[in-house]
Image 1 (cartoon, rainbow, N blue to C red):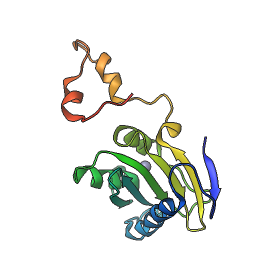
Image 2: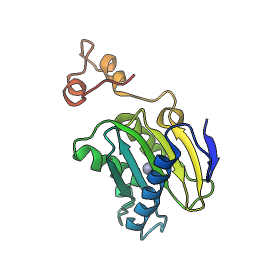
Image 3: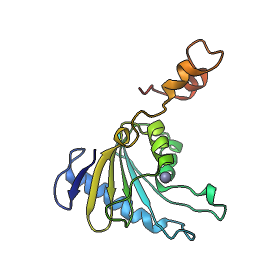
Length: 168
Ligand SMILES: [Zn+2]
């Protein structure tokens, strides 16, 4: 379900110039990774509907389960600044082909940026274009809580209270 593009060619989601700018930001964000344990540096850069870019890098911890992925750091930065409408995210590694978001990040992306186009890239100019929905088919989404909560008459008040818009 991913469209592979190599250097130069235009991909589907956004103008190539804009895509290249976003992947460049993701590649640069790798420099801020704190990854003394894995030494696997990941950068992420997301683009909001308003044209703002937020970046993230993986932040590890000696207590391994507390490691943060670059994608989630970027999403948290955007959300903390009040941005909710995220159209695209570039994720940069040195892996070839470019590495895909982990399962945990796919779930978080589905929650916070379900309509985003993803550009998985590396310093060699490889860019794999995909979407959050393509990476996580049949996802568990907030709508599942609407009808699945014990004692709930059909709507989950927590979801309604915290979510500005509904996702399918
Ligand atoms: Zn992850």
